[in-house]
Length: 330
Image 1 (tube, one colour):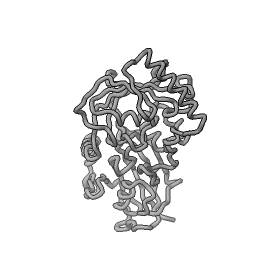
Image 2 (cartoon, helix red, strand yellow):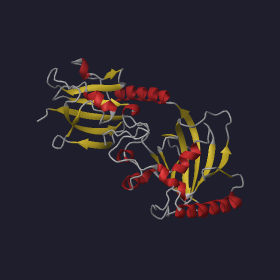
Image 3 (spheres, rainbow, N blue to C red):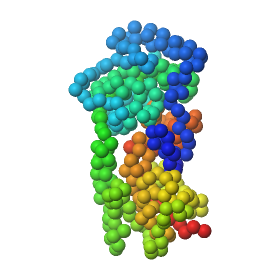
Image 4 (tube, rainbow, N blue to C red):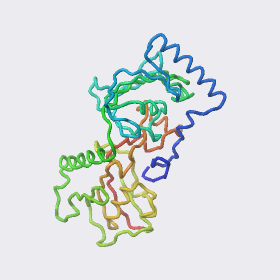
């Protein structure tokens, strides 16, 4: 999960990311399904939503609340509320402002949203607007089915509010502030026998580092050295998403750009035999990850090789921390 792969949109993970462009396959059978979907959507909106219009991609949308002066969403980081259901069916996933839920973050326009029809639709919106999208199965889950709630070839109806639009710098600033508050709340600076025992912010790397146990003085790694580590990866709320024990450690080439950047940068501060806490803002870890609806079936999408393994555990723009030990190589 901590390995780095250079996908076109900088996704990191152990599994290759399934190309979302496959959702628009131009095979004859898919064109037949596209026609079926289009006819069903047009019949539904003729009876239920006369304001809905077609988009060239194949989705249909209805504007429920417009904000002409709102910030453009294209290629930006969005915070959204949503409700998703199958056409003529029950809701299968909801993140509601009315229920007191926090908005969820995602990045639009870089193949980091599934289903792809939702990603297309979000690019049509502005900050503060509310749209309802009708997404054909060819831009949804295709012939995948998920229990009785989402049969195969389902047409999706997803209502979305864009609560905020942000840039990368906005996210970094907010995350660094959140980490500073976490350090205070967890009393992480309560031991200061040595400067490395307090939490050090490393400005060049924009990561946080705290020594937990001492290692061999001055025995640090150089590029292309073999590095053997054990670790536990957690989110700030304590949820564990990855682990390597001392009995089954990870050995890799240090500085060769094969694991996520922030962890390698944190390990550069360590001495062999040392244990440390390394806290990473999202741009040094899993970044935009992948946003998925329904959120509770992420593992299904991993099994289908639609999203990478780490995306089932780490949300978009999530701060993570690693309790890491740099072991002595045998």
